[in-house]
Each structure stands twice: as structure tokens, then as C-alpha cells.
Amino acid sequence: MNERIAGFLIDECLSSGLADLAIEHDYYALATTRMGRWRGRNDYSVARFAIDRDLVLVTNDRHDFEAIYEQIEVHPGIVFITAGHSKLRELKYQLAMFNLVLEAVEDSDPLSEAILVTAKEGRGRQVRLNISRYAFP
Image (cartoon, rainbow, N blue to C red; front, side, top):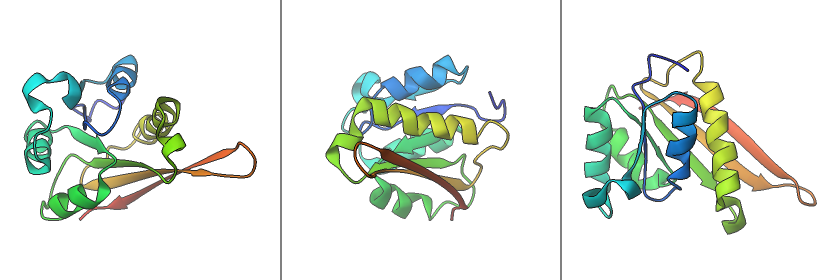
């Protein structure tokens, strides 16, 4: 566990099981789908909630949240979990992708960074997971 990370906020477009995985790794985590009034909130409100509490936002809505976060000079970090094929959006793949994130932040926090994790179908039944980090904005 990286103690410099306050925790994670899992956006409603991803499984709340990601919050459970973060908690299993001793991180504080919230899932908007479990927060009652937060279901269906606009993206700006979700981003502001995460930033105000120093939480790393985890979402698959790259387009909308990039537009919001690119206006913020310093933020606790954002994670984009994306998959090209709907099958790859299943819980087992979301968990595998988020597990890569948890490993990646173990030794260095994602302050003002974006982490992009992608899943693509390979040959046969193989699935390729890729992770990249970059300064953002």
C-alpha cells in the first residue's frame, strides 16, 4: 500500500467491485454506485468530489474526464480503464486492469498523472492488458 494515496473513487461506469479490491489492498475506496445520491451525478461533480478529498478517480469515461482534469493544474491522479470490446468490460477484466493500477502505484503516487489501462483481444482467447502513465495535464 502506498500511504501517500488518500484513496480511490470508482465512477459509476465501472464495477463497485473495484472499490472492494482497493480495500483488500488496504486503501480507502468509495464507489459512486454505493453512494445513494451520487448515482447519475454529472461528471464535473464527481471530479470535484474526488479532487476535494484527494481521491484518485477511476473511470472508463476518458473523453469527458480528460476535458475536466486538463483544466486542473494539480490533482491526486486519474485512472482510465478502457476496453475495446464489450466482453472485455466484464468484471474479471476490470479487476485485472485495476490490479495493474494498484501494483503501479505501490511505489509512486499518481499526483497530477493519468494512468491508462487498456484491454485488447489477442490471438485465440488471449487478452492483452497494457498500462501507461503520463503527466496530466
